[in-house]
Image (cartoon, rainbow, N blue to C red; front, side, top):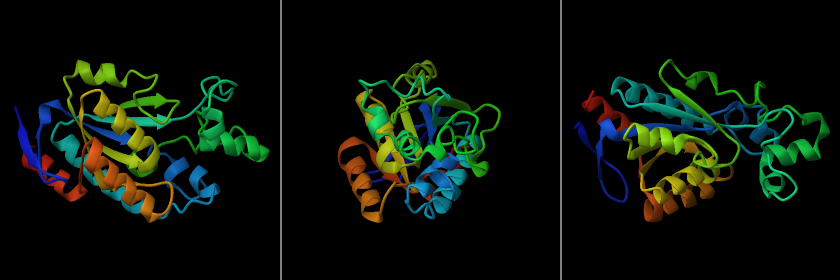
Length: 227
């Protein structure tokens, strides 16, 4: 057992690193890069630069500590066969689907397999040994093998970074909580789809009701101390 004490809110939390994984949520060009989906929708993506840098810092520390890194990416095939039919609310709410319906010039370009928009940002490219899981809904647990893979490895603690903190990160974190994982959101390695008060509200929800929040510096320090 490799147990570390992580400085977190609302209280420190002990993590057995042999039962811990890092989840990198939707760090794709769509959400983090100029010219990507969020940018085209008029959402300020400049804070993503800091979130990417801090997430990279945590990823490096996790790999040194032999904590597995799982990437989640959201996207659809060109025929949108996994996006949801007429009875699904997903096409009415998911931003890429809405933009591609409203702006014909964007069809097939947003969160579509094989496109630049769908790709993980270069700074956070997976390395051999990392696991990449593709999803078609906000939560990384919906319709994927994530829970089975984590259970198979004996994982109970989740460190989470990514974008958007108030959508896919929080959705995945809530499901993790419901599935009896212990989730920790790395606050400065996430970015909300919206203004600063949205990020503040998400952090409040997480630390009050669904898990813990910590800084990238504190997470990296804890991981490196057990490497």
